[in-house]
Image (cartoon, rainbow, N blue to C red):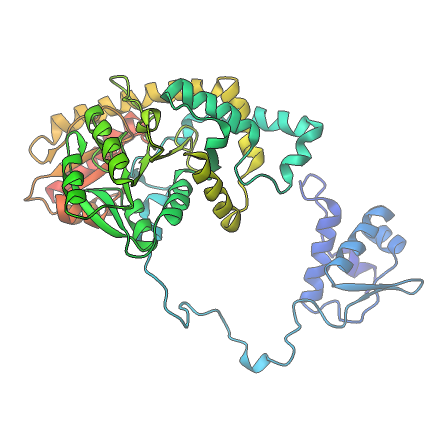
Length: 488
């Protein structure tokens, strides 16, 4: 291997964010893999290779150190550097005859069918989408978030946030969040009543896994949030469904079930705004449900995922704010205030429950993203989150008004809906003569993805039309496509 070989090994890009020594290291590994540098071959000395490649001696020392750490070369003192005779990627130890050409598509053992985890079309970013009610990432104040990150990494103490830490979540965030929840929701919680989670779904998972044992009963609404129902089934629960009307889950039916011996371990609710119908659970029913929980000693999971997005009237205070007996587990999230990829959620409950949830969380996840949590704590403490929320709330209100006006004007004979008081989606019930599945398929072929759940279509001939992630022009275009699909 003479000068010509090393001159043509690579073209070093001095403008790249990839360090020069990493570029050289990767290039040498590539040549070893391709067999152009053979096992056992002696490499040029540090000074010589540096001269051949036009870099300093220290850079080549870092290259050789990295190659040795990855076991591509061995360095013999006073003798030189040699390509390893046994390359790290090629040690099959006598099983070559068993080595498959590719991994299998299926396992040799059975797996449960977790429908909620199946890929959905709303992950596609190249077409319009009526999703399940997602926020618009374009509204995120990324400048403020980036500024908070920079402040954190400028502190001498930032290294502590990169280590293993408290499974309850960042202590500063828990302190600030406790005050925020007391001020905005009337929940008299303290930091010890809080567990920071990676979004509300983790809070549901931890709560249900702690509470449920095989064949225990759980009451849910019909229709209800499929993600919670699927999770309850996975935890072994026997689901008892009760009706949902324009005032939310029908608590009288829960009382009847309890009176006939069907006392649940828990009742799952989405009071603001019920998923999927968007209705709000009335204050009288909230009090009645709390009384039943105290009488029959069952838990209430209050999934308040959409509390912050209320447009027309003051929201009703959560059940957690007036819980006399410690029955309520309150689950919320800020992922919709920022964007779904920012996984900041929380669980509020009596301390003994939070302690158990933290122990369980440590088993499956150990802790959250402390840097993100600390950045979020700063934004919350400085009022930035509140300002982001006010700005996005105004935009989403206008989008709700716009899509409601368009639906009422152009789809009055095919779609029945009620303009929601809050939330990020509309519950649209189609005329029985309309084949909703065909409409969804036809719309997709024309460039519009409409999120569809089988249960909603089969039982109610309905869809959730998420409007928050679309601006006015996108809403108009999406509705135009949907109207074309309806006319097919």
